[in-house]
Amino acid sequence: MFRIGCHLSSAGGYLAMGQTAESIGANVFQFFTRNPRGGAAKPIDPRDVADFRAFAAEKGIGPILAHAPYTLNAAGAEARVREFAEATMADDLRRLELTPGALYNFHPGSHVGQGTEKGAELISAMLARILAGFGSIPATTILFETMAGKGSEVGRTFEEVRALIDAVEAAVGPEAPLGVCLDTCHVWDGGYDIVNDLDGVVAAFDRVVGLKRLKAIHLNDSMNPLSAHKDRHACIGKGKIGQEALARVINHPALRDLPFYLETPCDLDGYRAEIALLRSLRAE
Image (cartoon, rainbow, N blue to C red; front, top):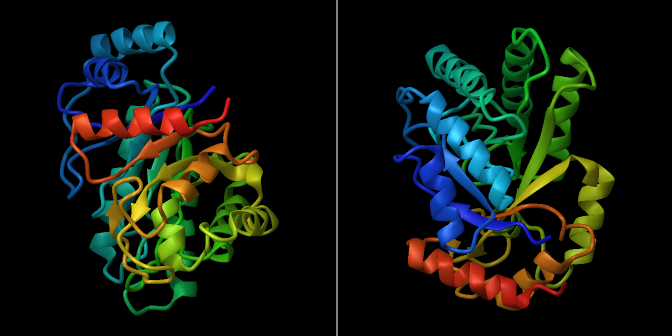
């Protein structure tokens, strides 16, 4: 089954997101756990969650992908920045226990001049503390997002992502619920040529990280050329990656069974059109 959807507003709650997803032809969706620039999350209505879970089961929607706020930086140089990231992520994971089987995606962070190694150490230590203090294995899988390498971002290379996973597993154990969300715009901007060598990129990911850890794909075109390290998303077929290359992504035998989430600069009508386009390009 082709699982394709997009980023939706969470303002109306879980059931409203599920109904919106169905209305535009989506069977998965992504949402921010709270304001993308940070702040407190609004209370969850247990009835809304129950209604959504029933609706999702009936309509075949899922897995849902919760996206952490952009302001989280577990690799920050200031203690208050790291503490905010840890408290927010721990709270997000507790809230997501209400929707078992969800995915939780976050940008690993930026080392802001401390160096990649130090940044990775801070990120993995934070995750290890959160998981160790959880008391049990969370019902949510935590995903490291592949990054474009803008500024001092950690997680541009597959090797950096694998090092983060290894460090957390070394502290918590191999049962740590970790995975990866591969962003097509980010890996392209980061230097992985998914246009001319998709097979090679997939093989490199498998060799370094392992395809078993790949749990989701952000399907985005890019405004920038290969290795630009800028992270500017474009609508499908309107950027430097192009429709043909992205069609190969959704049909690749190692990727096609994963859920795909659009983060293109579209409104709902635009997402509806992109989902319809991608469904027409999908070889079943």
